[in-house]
Amino acid sequence: MYSLYVVTDPDISLGRSPVEIAALAYEGGADVVQLRDKHADGGQLLEWAKEIRKIADSSGKLFIVNDRLDIAILSKADGVHLGQSDIPVSDARKLVSPDFIIGASVKSVEDALEAERDGADYLGLTVFETKTKADADPAAGLELLNEMHLAVSIPIVAIGGMSKENASSVVKAGADGVAFVSAVVSQKDVVRTSKDLKALITASKARR
Image 1 (cartoon, one colour):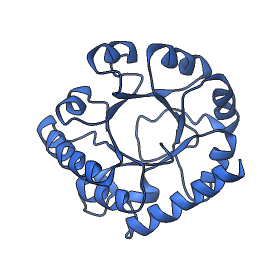
Image 2 (cartoon, rainbow, N blue to C red; image 1 turned 60 degrees about the horizontal axis):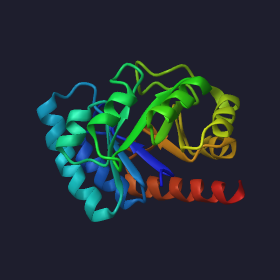
Image 3 (cartoon, rainbow, N blue to C red; image 1 turned 120 degrees about the horizontal axis):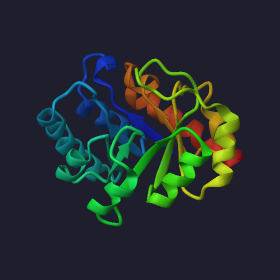
Image 4 (cartoon, helix red, strand yellow; image 1 turned 45 degrees about the horizontal axis):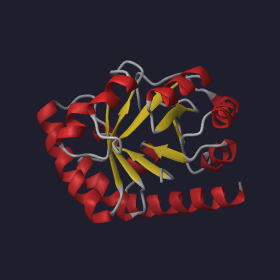
């Protein structure tokens, strides 16, 4: 469900908009696209979100909005991804339907268990160091990823410094999905890159 998870970032997308990146990523096999832009205003985000919603529908794939529950609801996105400084998962869950997806960034097994209890549908864990997000959580490493995988029953999406070189290692450690930013959106051929990464993740899961 979350195998290939692509996160937009207009700052490193070679001049392409989040809508363009989303279309290319879905074409390449992305299961999820998350709209993330820390600089755009609400109006711009909503415009992009509505366009990506249409593309996701035509592709039969999932669309998630980062941080902004209001944008997610207004654009009819499949869900929202909440960081630890955003509104609590438990409060967000009160505002949306049961089938609305809520992802939660976590740093520890305790965080993960709390997010699961509060109604999160999946967890996001920063496994390796990353330069694409200024406020990224500290790198958790593969051991913590594995501990978390054994402790919770909901999917874990690994993010942070993900590349074709290390994607297999996080899948082996228990990640259900791998989230890529620069490894996809900064590439000239997003479709080909997405296809290659999807094949790599699928093969890694088969060997697990």
